[in-house]
Image 1: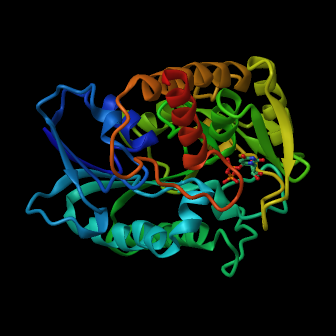
Image 2: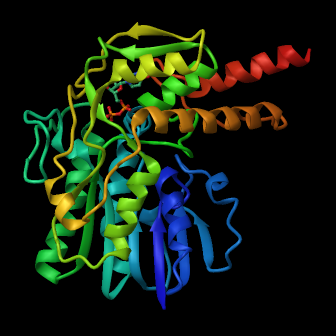
Image 3: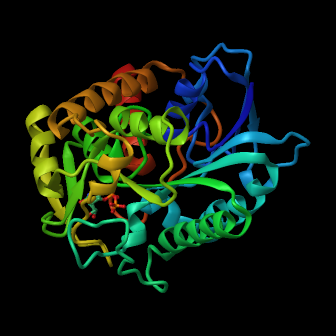
Length: 353
Ligand code: UDP
């Protein structure tokens, strides 16, 4: 029977993995550690399994006598406005927490880590294979995230080389879907929040920059197979994503068709915004045969819109708590952040008045 630790288990991806881990019959105990920076206990509120233990705190500060057969480290913000706001904390979450969590691995244990396609920076080749070393700037605005993911990868691959530790590292391309925060600030979530509130979708720059948008269920299926379900001998980093590349403008345009009355507004470009991103899935197809991020963005975005609608309905009907606003994001660049949630609440108050 296995003891498993999920750092960041209350987050968007972490909580989906927790759901899947709890389907395992060989699981004795599942400990989640999450500081609720970008995660929320709402993501775990549906679980009634006594094997789950949730600890609120930072992964880099974990204190326990337990040793885990498997550690899955997902405790990092992934949205640029969130990680850019607190670079030191971002670096700690990736570098310090990886170093610290390795101490809690039982002999022969496995350490799984969600790295990012941002290790490729603003790539000069497309699609990007795992062997591409990237075009990254350690002085740039994304450095706290992309360089700390690179350093965490270095820690893990060196632990594998020097100490023979079993590591599983995925490089995730843009993931979206239910359980994204309403104030997450990334493209799909921003556009959906905006479509449902202000009606103005902020496209940064000309919107011709591209990404490969992966629907969460497909991505989590790949993670489950790679982290624990399949027997795998591959030891390197693995690209996980959808390899259909779509421009930001096309995604925004599509969302305006789902939310009549909404429209695109162009905002200034973001400094060092990668121009393109698309995974080369050759290695992936060998490692996880048959796996595919099969959900087309049109379908995934429509499902996510429905989930956002339900969450916003919930926000509107839940009592307005006195005291500090729950969503505190003060996003520097245009985005919904707390603004659209506050707008919803204002609208609600005026509806009630
Ligand atoms: N983007 C945008 N409007 C938004 C949010 C993001 O045009 O409201 C763009 C952003 O500039 C980038 C792309 O969408 O080119 C993807 O951004 P995201 O923050 O989702 O992730 P990234 O891949 O940049 O980490």
